[in-house]
Length: 215
Image 1 (tube, rainbow, N blue to C red):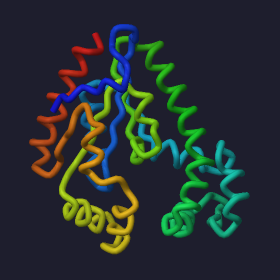
Image 2: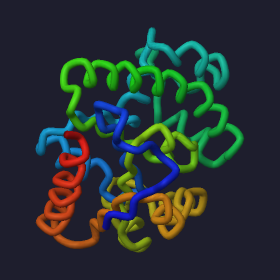
Image 3: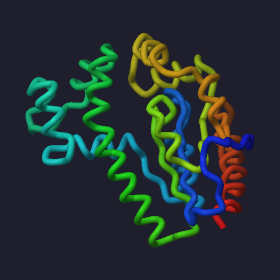
């Protein structure tokens, strides 16, 4: 699908193509970002960066510990993300507070990543994967937006297969923007409900279109 958005930049004055990749819980974002990387895109994953800035001594560590207390620390002094998640995920206000402490540092690292890509590969494609890109409004920072989708029941099943419970999955889905609403923001939609080969074929088609824009 190639529904172009008029809310983001044209490609006539920018040397590097910045692509946002998002989707709902367990819709295959990480799988798709890995395929883009294999095809030659420069990929950064916001979740991974978010984990990095929470490490002891990193940018968000002190503020997060000060906000949520030493109860979130493991024996090694690192932030226990499961303990932190148990506090913030059931409470929208606390989750918003955590995001406010973490996201600015994630964005700063992303900007450094984009600057490096633009310097080293000015006609390249930089892909940033993030879970709440639309909800936070950060999707506006990108030239194109790719949204991964699959049926809700498949999201729940995949989440459970990863080690969560059905109740946890449905609770998280209830707090997320619906897939149908996310679709309306997309320049490209990749449906991951089929086989890996079918998903790969869609990623390949999107990549070929993006590559033409990046020239």
